[in-house]
Amino acid sequence: MRIFDSHAHYDDARFRDDADAVLQDMARHGVEHIINVGCSVPSSRKSIALAEKYPFVYASVGIHPHDTDDAVPQDLATLEELLRHPKVKALGEIGLDYHYQPYSRMTQLEYFIAQMELAQRADVPVIIHSREATQDLMDVLRRFPVRKLVCHCFSGSAETAAEIAAMGYHLSFTGVITFSNARRSHEAIRRVPRDRLMIETDCPYMAPEPHRGARCDSRMLKYTLAALAEIWGVSPEEAAEITARNAEEFFDI
Ligand SMILES: [Zn+2]
View 1 (cartoon, protein in one colour):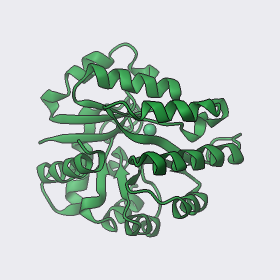
View 2: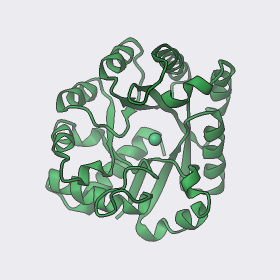
View 3: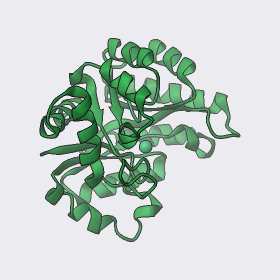
View 4: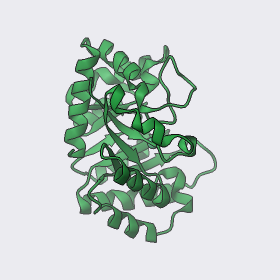
């Protein structure tokens, strides 16, 4: 089985003591590629450092909606510069998150739109984070079309999934699809063409069953793949191969 983790955060504090040990164990578990995703300028730089250290790790750079309050306009120029690094494969994660209070909707929208404009200029794939913001998200996506875009940790409705796929974009699913109450995610998966779907850990979050609640890492993707394989009616190996090929094409690896 060859596995592609399209969204991970090994620069997170929860990996401070053992990121190296965990990453060195990946090959043994069939994990071939990992995209380490930036959430701010400092975490984007850490993602690049990890990508420089490990041949199978690639980076994305961006400002997460939770981090826009601490961002400064100069950060956009810095991101543009970081995008030229040969191991940076995408801009993200960027988007909107109206879950945690308080937040500034205006600031989130400003940085989201500025980064979508940057993605258009630089012509790079985009990784989207969206939570409880579907209407504003779809508005921005319609106004700022890009060549490649993935909605990560997708948790929306089957209708929204179908709409995003119809725009030519990708969707990525986490270990949430292994939960017993994941009917909504399963319905969304059925509406996405197979060549438009990727899998991810979003680690250290979103550990699949039977590790729900524990610190997640890419070695747990076999459980996510087993759940996906059941929905698709294929073997886990085949589900791994399809999602790995989709991610390789998407990130140009
Ligand atoms: Zn993330």
